[in-house]
Image 1 (spheres, rainbow, N blue to C red):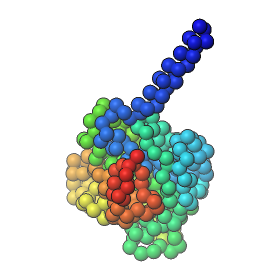
Image 2: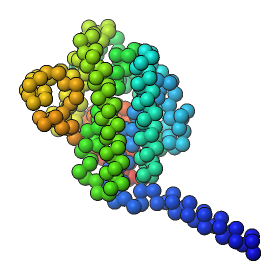
Image 3: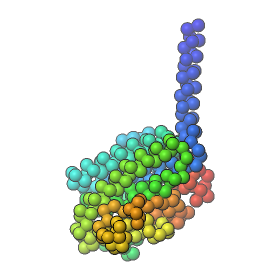
Image 4: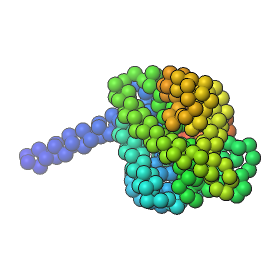
Length: 303
């Protein structure tokens, strides 16, 4: 009798656990699930770039269960950073681990996609930004300024994606998660822009080009690749573009009302693929991004 009682308890516990696992994302509209899963691609990239840059190790060391068997990033390595910048980037890295965890606790998600975080991948971005090959090739891991400029490439893309998706979400759970992610991503972008703004007049060596010019060129490239007008601004702008059309300094990017710009998943894919085409993978995602939205542009079924 006692054996039967405990057997029943074990059976019910297993059923409850199974039901709990199966219910991840099941109470959300399918459209919300898709919109929550898509930015997981970017959160994986940020987590790996920041962890590798500050510690020389990524998710496989700090949270292998979140990588879920996905391939290790290509070319990621530790950066030569000062103690202050290393501390900031380390904090960013662990924040991104939390983001990935929160997202995968809410929706099923997918394993880490193949990411190209090599110096060659970032050098290609910089070459495209200036319209010619920089000599020597830009190395994002070489020093503080290079790493901050490489980091400037990343969080802002996700930030605009979160702004763009918010009006399309239906469930309170999805809206709360997106709002929480947006808050921290915005903070990261603000910190990076402030650190670069402070160094704006310094030259990026050995190119003899200022930090501000590098940032402006990166923003111009993202506008060009996104193919949807002005949604990106550098650290210095024409006064007619600055806040209230009265100032050149642009420590935070915003529209004519100083509100954050928005981007669609299509625009984001065009930028992170580096191809200007959501159907043509490359750049930081050699095999393309994961999730139903991204795969739909590759003629593949989503998970």
